[in-house]
Image (cartoon, rainbow over the protein chains, first blue to last red):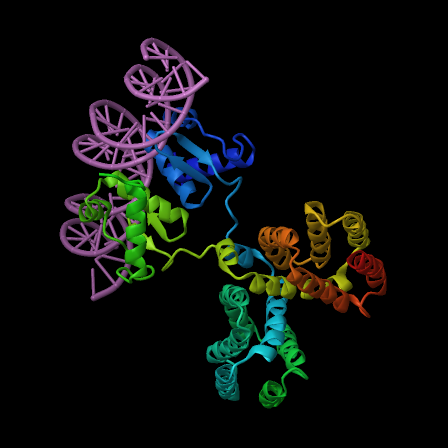
Length: 222
Length: 222
DNA sequence: AGTTATCAGCTTGTCTGAGGAGTTGATGCA
DNA sequence: TGCATCAACTCCTCAGACAAGCTGATAACT
């Protein structure tokens, strides 16, 4: 018999299916190890490992002497996984949502240090865009966007942006190689959102950004 | 010897510490099970369960015949956990980011079914706000906001909103009991963001919303 | 020399049997 | 009724045995 996955993992998946199927309700106790082992036709230690895996995924919880209990109907879907599976358009729109609000907040909360950081990452980005766009430009651009989010001084938005970063980075690099037309559209949209958010709200920030904007236009024309 | 946690969990924590401490780099192989068991002074099956738990948390990956490998430097921080820990202001600003963008997109993407759903949840919400605000109002309000996000037809924003829901719900209920002044400010901000986003972009959607807005004002005055 | 086959020795995977430790509910007593 | 006791159940841990899979070195072949 050929198996691509270890028995323990298969058992974990099977348990997950049954839990999702409502065989055992939330908070309810599962049958004992020996019973489950007999039901699934595997050894006790295999069941134990399956349970331990689901415990790691916060679906089950085992209490010595009492039993194994369901603490979540299904595995909390990994947020990173959602991002990986989602279409790039959806992801970019999500990023836009975060950055727009972050830029708005940044305009009213930025400290002098934030402004300095903003200018620095902006200069790096401009330097990187002097040559043909490459991985270095992608990193510089991400760092610039991160500096805006940082200036918002909001932990949730920061975490959120960071969780988007890997996906965005990969997409940008891919688009770079394909010289995709979408890149400009989405990239411009993100930059425009930042510009819109800080215009009138923070002249100094806007002024710093405008210089960059001109630089971006210049490089896109060349 | 008194143990609050099973040995296997303790072993998992210890491994996690060592991984985080850089003892084994990303992608690198851990020592064999027997070696680890000797090092930590536990049985082999205990080590196996610890590894299995970390595999469930996507930190380790074991390949039969090859070894156990590090696939993440640390346990991916649970997104729900970030939200729980974050201040309510940060959370509400995050929600505002999501809903603003969602409303903008909804204005251009909503289907007739979305509009119908929008009107329905709006009516429910108004009905609930007729009396003194209670839990039912909170649910109705959340459902209304969800209908806006749904109409954006963006999986990332939808997932994001859902992940915010429990935290927002709890906060709203708490604020309800305290009759907190913040509630109005943030709530109005969220509703205003929706209004701003759809005004001029979707007259029909805006018209449906305006009726609700008047209702909200009326109830807040009474 | 370069390529392929084989294989020894690691690794993880699974099962079993034996106790240890904790929980729970029934039982019996005051 | 209230409480202590305890038996039966649960998970927890260990040890040993063998299966299954991978890897690198060696041998054989072209």
